Length: 335
Image (cartoon, rainbow, N blue to C red; front, side, top):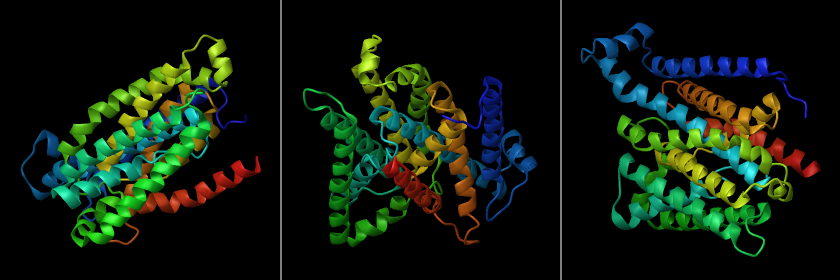
């Protein structure tokens, strides 16, 4: 497979460049918007907080937004790469495998029947729904003597996506109040979030990102095929289970914080494999960095596409992702 970066030194340099862009994206996310803020003011808000409007904007709005965009993009990209590796399906992603729709369904049920409201409550329901759906997909895909197979887990994910989406739509159509409450969250957005939402899920997502890096060499063996991996002594069921838990934490945490943002888990893994090849020891760190960069850039762009109003970042990723999805689907069909 031809890659953009061939040697180890080139790949290390690519990680370094990605790290610089990642940090620059966070700074730009804090600095730019309806009210532009200088980097000196950003530093002063933490070194000498004075309660001014700019300092409050930085600490209560811009910083949480930047951190949530960064970790959400990183987590969705890594989750997508693991999903594609386990299922050997190049279109696998949290949105395709029902995680987004499951999280949305739990929010709709909570809002319609239990009076749930507010981003914090929605975040909790979304995390539970995403985790439940991911485990259900994994369980359904493992039923049978042949265990977990790419075809079964893909069909299970597609079926649950349609099932939960239909139920959510039915509940929304019968409850106008619920529709008004959850509509903005449904689109996928990192604006209006506060630091407690970030701190509630970030530790689990951080542990999962580290776990994905540790799992990388086992994913390389699994990528050789089930029979080859077993022949080499790998306990494939444990590797798949560990990967499934990591995906639950990454995708579930992302959906709980930012809503059902699609296409990041498809776009970034494919681009990273083009850059560094199929070695997961490189793919996963690259996905984490450049996934965060993509969502940070999309969020910054969403502030200016209809300035002074903002467009939810989920719409920006859809604008980028739909043509890419069609391209990948056509290429997969031809091959």
